[in-house]
Image (tube, rainbow, N blue to C red; front, side, top):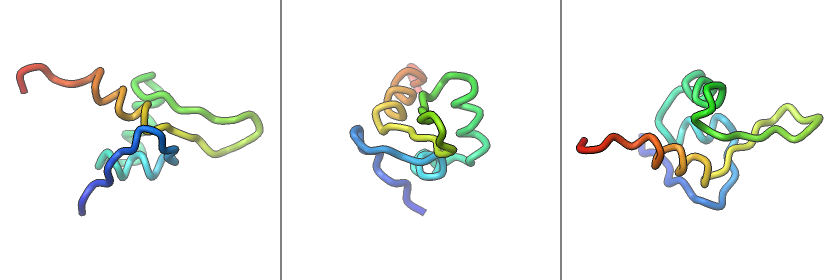
Length: 67
């Protein structure tokens, strides 16, 4: 399965973000809980929104040097 391209201005659900990163939903939830990935939940809503910019920022800030 080919991973989706992460678009900077797009809004992703948790499942869409997990699919785009090629990780499980539980791993994505851990990344959010530990503060590695920024997500938002508007008041009164159950849905969590993740921006493409947030995903790209996490990937850039956690890159391994020399790998």
